[in-house]
Length: 203
Image (cartoon, rainbow, N blue to C red):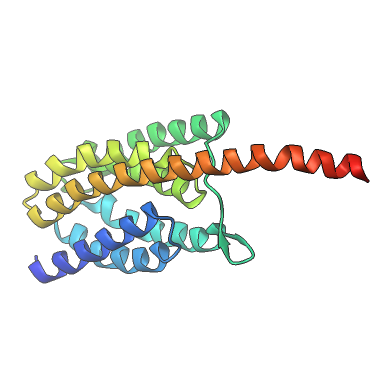
């Protein structure tokens, strides 16, 4: 493993998560660079599902670039996840974990097929919710990081383990800021609503 490759990937990842926390759409192109670097890092570490996950991330990131720009050049507002969408994501994570676990255990030399499958599936769910500007993505990312940190320590990816501990702090920041943004949007809508009614009555 090339320490510089892991270090560069870690740096790009830190910038990517910070930009997502502050709702900056540059998170996506920088994230794509991070994904390509970690594709190599994880493959060399026999974390095959996490390696291939990076390619899926690239696809979701392209969708995120489009999705975050809702119109007028501004980033889409934060939304809470609808119960049906959150339930579908949770189901997809559970099914994907079981399927990947069986595949990795039977077709690869991975020594952590279950953990690799779990973190991969949870990360996909979190990335999808983030691409749609759904607040609950941060809850899932925090849960992923709780699993990732000891997993990377076990795999002797110490720089990456430290990065994901830092990610956890950034995720808490992102959760706080997106909650504030959501509250501000709700307050603005409440203020504008009576004004819209008065305008309609004036007509």
